[in-house]
Image (cartoon, rainbow, N blue to C red; front, side):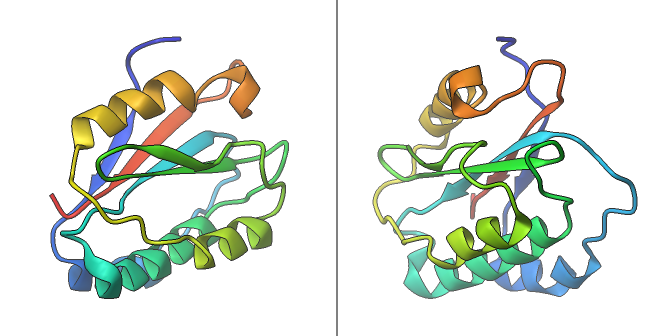
Length: 144
């Protein structure tokens, strides 16, 4: 497993995120293993976590999700990171979106570095649904 991973960091004000969610469109078929790492710490708060869920729904909706297409896993962190679901947990976009809608708010301290290491070491393995020869992408959603 390589220690290098493409990472998209999404942060700052959650209200700003809502302004861009309608612009997500994937015009080409892509095959990728994507793990979204979500900040569920106290600084996010329960109210903003609802906005995070809405953002994630729109993000997932932009991909062609399938067992032989794009796979999406998700981990949430605060003081201790945890895998909410592995890359091979869901085989349809609707199933992933349903899981996002039911994502619980965790609460706790913000330990982003620990969470990034955890995802790199635990989420991109074959037993977690990661496929050989398929691009691995990590997306970090945090308030900073």
